[in-house]
Structure formats: C-alpha cells, structure tokens
View 1 (cartoon, rainbow, N blue to C red):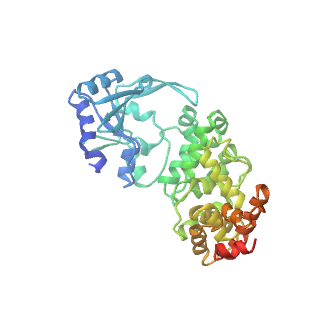
View 2 (view 1 turned 60 degrees about the vertical axis):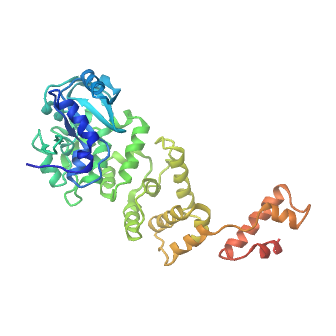
View 3 (view 1 turned 180 degrees about the horizontal axis):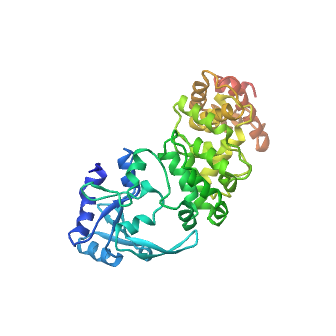
Length: 390
C-alpha cells in the first residue's frame, strides 16, 4: 500500500470537505497535481477532489455543512468548496463525449477508471483518499512516477487531439518531473510531431503561460531541445535559437541565481516581444530590458544602478551565455555596489547653485552629464564635486 502524507492532507479544513462527501455516502479522492507532487516530495498547492457526487449534490452538501460553494465550472462538473479560506475544487467523475482540440463536451461518469482514462498523463491519474491511501486505477501511474517517466495515457495522438495544449504541457511537465536520463518518450514525440498544426488553434495566452512555466523549471533545456527537434518550438516562437539556454542554466546554477522564465525566454532570441504570447505588461517590460541590454557596453555597476541587482545579474548571465563572454570575477559585487548607490545631485541643486542658467532641456542634459561622470567615478564623486564640474 502506498500512502501520501502532508499538512495539506491532514489539515482540519480539508478533512471537513472530504467528510462532507463521504459521510453522505459519496466517494472523495484527491487527484492530479496534489497527489503527484506529494509522492515526489514537491510543494502542493491546488487541491483537486474527484467524486461520484453530481455538482448539484456537492452544492447541497456544502451548504448543509456550512461551507461556501461556488459553481466555478458547474457545467463541466466542478464546484469550488471553500473551507477555512482554503479552496477545494471538487469535480464529478467525467468522460469525454466530444472534443475539438480546445474544448470538450463531457458527461458524468460512474467510476474512477472512466475518469482516469480521460486525463492526460499517467502520473497525473493518481488518486488518494482522505487517509492518504493512493489508488492507481490504470495501473501505470505509480510505476511511471517512480521512474520519473512522463507518458500520455493510452494513445498519445488521441490524448493530444482532445486538447492540443497537451503538447506544451507534455514538455512542461517533463521539464519539472521527468528524468533527464530517461529522456522523452518516443511515442509521445512522434504523436506531437504529427499534430503540430493543432498549436495554431490555441489561444496565445495559454501558449504563453505554458511556455513561461516550462522555462521556469529548474533545468528545462532538454525539454526545449526536444521541442525544437520535433518542430514544436518553431510553432510557438518564430526565429528562436535555444543554443544559449543550457549555458545560461549552468551559469544560474553556478551563481545561485533563481530560475527565471522571462530571462530564459530572452536567451531564446527571436522576434517575439511578448505581445504575441500575451505576456503581462510587467513580463514584457522585463523581457525588453533583458534583450535591450545584452549587447550594450554598460558595466556591471551601471546595470545595477539602473535596473536593480537581480535584473543586472541576469543581464550579465545572458551576456555570458549568448555572447560567450566570461563572467568576470567581482562583477556581482560591482552590481550590488551600483544598486545601492543614489545619485547625489537633484535638479534643485543646480538651479540653486546657478540661478537662471539651467532650465528645461538644458537642465535635463546637465543632470544626465553629471550622472555619467558620477557613474564613471564608480559612484564616488560627491555632490559638491559634481556641482563644481557643472
């Protein structure tokens, strides 16, 4: 018998949700990411529960138990039950009736096996009850998870045609949970290669979200290389080149830099500025800073001063990975020095020291010139010396 443990499972709020169902004679099994991650000793976030109770019954039971029920996806059998401010997505066993690669028409199912057969990957089709006892209804998930072998359930091509986003999810999940030594499943890659056109049917928001999640994995270079080799990467991004990704990941690990999906997206190059991937404004801004400063002559200290320590370190790593420039000893210390520096001269200082001399564009030009002198002094020139240099 295999069991999972963890505070996420034993917390009273979650046990109350399970009891709400089981005390009424229904099944309640956690499924998917929470079970997979618990077995892999990875953090658990989303709590998904599968049940034979229909959504209207779940709503009724939640109300009777004094819990908040929100019909977040009731047409597809999903009700979010909030217990002690913790959301639990409860979904009735389902089976696909019709799919078009983006949306599915589903019917409620009677058994866990039917529910498992419509899921995407074997290690995502693992269930556990409120006591943590794991159920592997298809008889494949536990073995694949133990081997870190990431595979589609049954026929990969059929799984893909049900939802073409599974192409990108396959690479993303392999990057996070697969065994690099095991490699990527040949049947999966063949099915992906013959169904690449389906990527065009996906919303760019979904594509962008999956890509950033993939690139944020600790070591995504193998999965990205496989995407390139089977043609999926070119379907997602035009004109990209992943040769700098592995060196960048290596440098991040050497310097204890946290993984950053946007920094790694910058390393792929291409023409994508984030609009086509529907990235957030903040993500697009960071992507632009990374790309705009890879080839500039700004030193480490100036990068730290202008963009902050973390962004400046990222630019230095990108330069080293993409331009094959060495990461100079002491460069991170220079970044920190610049990031901590504050330009000592303000507009009012020049206007007070030279009444009537500086105004408008001339004032801005003077401040920029003094700032350049200050940076060139390694941030040591003080206010009086800079004003004298005016």
